[in-house]
Amino acid sequence: MKLLEDRIRTDGVVKPGGVLKVDAFLNHQCDVELFDAMGEEWARRFAGVPITKILTIEASGIGIACVAARHFGGVPVVFAKKAPSINLDGDQYATTIYSFTKQREYPVIVGSRFLSPDDHVLIIDDFLANGCALEGLMRLCDMAGATVEGIGIAIEKAFQGGGDALRARGIRVESLARISAMDGETGELAFIDDSAE
Ligand code: 5GP
Image (cartoon, rainbow, N blue to C red; front, side, top):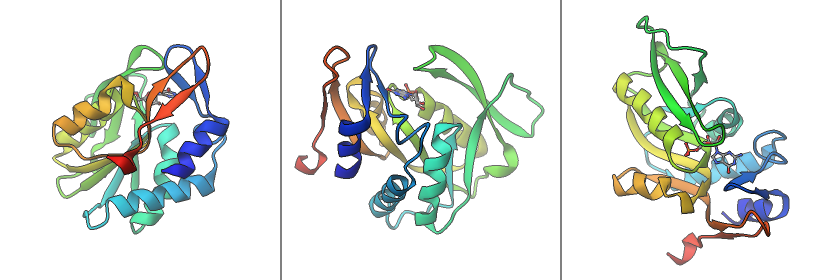
């Protein structure tokens, strides 16, 4: 999606260690018009897929998912909460996720009344790197018996391989900007041109 790629080029900052900072428009200051265009694009790509719920993870995914939901008929948005500990009392689904940016595991939970076997879920998140966050969200859907219809990602760092591993398993992943390479020294980055594929 050219709009997002252009914004990453102008306002994104490539950091050492394979980290892209996009806090000027995506995950600290939020460009809601851009979020709206992203939601419209995911709706175009997932047209005809019966989505009943959008699932994301706090905190960065929430704003993007809520704006996107407007383009999916206003379906509810559920966000997995990062919990201090896992409380296995049966009213929540819980798993742990390894964080790429924080380099540690953390527990996440979703209330069991917000995901059910009737749900057809679109998972939305800001970044896809190794895929650990998405694996965790898919485990929560599995526990609930919900169907994952697909995954919408704003920025996929394709060089980390998480996206292709998911696609190889037959999971539909629609990333709006796919970065093929990033150089922490020079700050340069390159995108995969999906229109040429
Ligand atoms: P994964 O679990 O796919 O390895 O990483 C995805 C999660 O890590 C995202 O939810 C995002 O919060 C965070 N993340 C991964 N790479 C980056 C990055 O380059 N920049 C930022 N800001 N967050 C990232």
